[in-house]
Length: 352
Image (cartoon, rainbow, N blue to C red; front, side, top):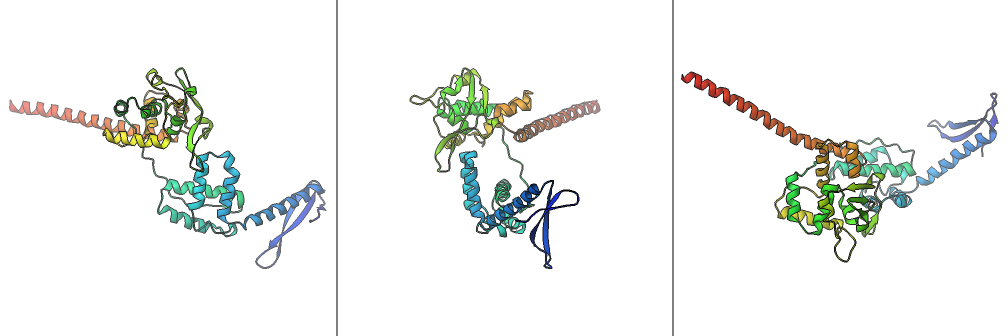
């Protein structure tokens, strides 16, 4: 290990060999500290990190992905772990066999370009985000500045009150009805509907504390919400609470798996000639109603379990565009009425 030397200033410095320049001249790094021990510690720490980085650069990107997932598995939701393992198996096939020392910005950009030709911008951005996280852990010297496809504006549909009421009447008395009521009037996700039990209901309050998702083995399991925003207590109308009775032999409020909720919902919507919208859009319905009532965004976010307001703003844009079309129609009708009135008066005057 390099030894520290005392400088005229009284500080201590260690010089560490760090390779050679293109012309063969040696490159040294200097570590200065108030004491000899501190300076030598800084130098030793640098050497240890460099050796660790050298060892990491010998592993393939595929191996780095798997190691990253294993390290993070205890802090990630089962569905996230499943998605990460899918990504490790299918994303960026041209990069996965490469050692980390051979990963370059050019190669990453090329892989992103290939991926962007077949999947959505959101999928590309998610895949690149995971790649960046893996590289930050195992090859922090690689700095990515990748040009990613621009995200597309989400196509959000907000069902009308009439459409929601028609749907509820059509599925009255079914397990699906309970899920629809919870989503439309309580803003629960399908995973939260499927996880809800009788013990989660206290009077007219529904306590959301868990969700039902598939784990890495594709088995349905209960998990905690992804973020603190997912924990919430929601007051529901009396007519909703009265219908949230578990089926005999179970304490589950909605005795359906999340994927079954989606399947039954799509069938019911198509069978009763309702416009095409998703079960998840029932959450947008409630947000639009609350917004029209003047409820502050903060409370809407808390009730719906949204961590950020970005989704709400997309919903509001849709709501405002609907309102704008109504206003435009009113404007045109007003001009037509005025024009017709004056035309009639003009014709009447000239007939005299």
